[in-house]
Image (cartoon, rainbow, N blue to C red; front, side):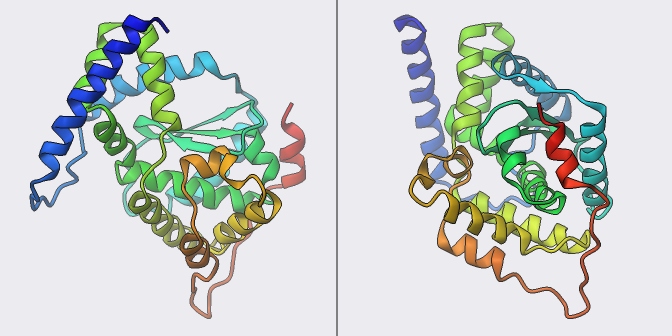
Length: 262
């Protein structure tokens, strides 16, 4: 990226950072989510983000894999009180152990994460966590806090491909704050319970990931973009379910799923 473009981007970040700081001094009592935007606007912004994001990553499109993801998403969404989006799951061929939520219900899963997971049920609780970010507008909030929605939409509609690509990468790599991560965890744990999937599988995955990669935990993309601390691990691994709770396994052969990955 040229020095001029970097300078313009830094100016935009500085301006909207100051605007955000100014507004943060006021404590408004708002019933509606302050980060909700019109569906048409979010759709248009999502299209721009996805177009540039997919230029940098290769996605896997296989009917059997799509069918597996459909089974998991159907189990989850049928147990949600409201579903804000027509969720689209994109599988990215990359060794990163990561997953992230973009705008308008687009969720991206890296093959590195699928290879690390031990079951379809573990993938289900990870997807429930990402759905939690989407339903609670955390992606929009993150963009608004980083550069401001007006700036993002202005750059997107202005057609500046280089800046748009950099901002998309910024949105992918920037971590959610602890409050949003805990809220997404709470959403996932509750949704898993409703969906007859053991909620503690989320904590089990966190613990296994930490043990396996204890010497390089902070280098994992999933940890960088989903800050993980001992409180979150403890809460999810100790989550209480009613004595009558019994997990209803997903009818998915996980070994076969992993073999689908090129």
